[in-house]
Image 1 (cartoon, one colour):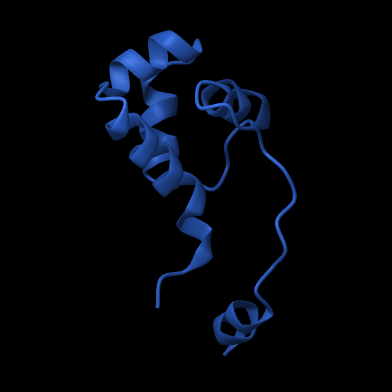
Image 2 (tube, one colour; image 1 turned 180 degrees about the vertical axis):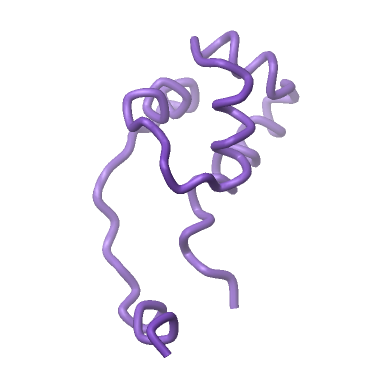
Length: 78
């Protein structure tokens, strides 16, 4: 079963690929560095929310609260 903590990185990769643009092009268009895009797409857990929103704005989205799947939390504690 795929863990939900990959939703953001998967979303960005999928949307970028649908637009047929490179990581470098996304970085330039969204006003962030290429390293930030790479970190984001690789699932780095400590990212600046303002920069994440800059990238997500390219796709008409922004960060927001998402309900936790309590079953995943229970599984991770064991």
